[in-house]
Image (tube, rainbow, N blue to C red):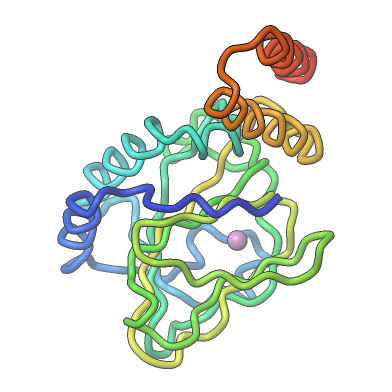
Length: 226
Ligand code: NI
């Protein structure tokens, strides 16, 4: 499932994130790529040693924690600290690849299984040319170029690429999430029920049927969650 999550950051948070990144010292993006992905990865990334990375991560975590749509779509159990990247000039694309299944935490103490990937756009679409996130899933190819502060959530198992940025600079935040429900189809069913329930609560209220359906949602989550 590909899910667009609009306005993850408030306007003030977006300004703050961009301010923090304005003078960042970027390094070669290959630092976090597996050997296969490294061949096609040609971008820049904020290193773990960057002085602004902690504040940026706290800002993004705070925004994710209050976002009901993100929660419903990803059902996150562990979120790897977000990374930040930049596509511009000669380091301007990331060819088709799949994300590694297991990711070590930055301190090296544990692994997080990547079930869900997410890209949070930090540059406005008119600030760069090209730079689309292209994702292939069972429904075909989809390209995303969202407004700054908005995010796309997609299964980590999908093949995806960032097309060359031909002009300007594309700065984004990307992250890997271990879901409580590792199977993408099961996550989709839960998401569909959850969204329908939210709409039903608004249109018909907490009727007996809505309460029962809510029970079905939680019973499925109980069966499927790890
Ligand atoms: Ni990727």
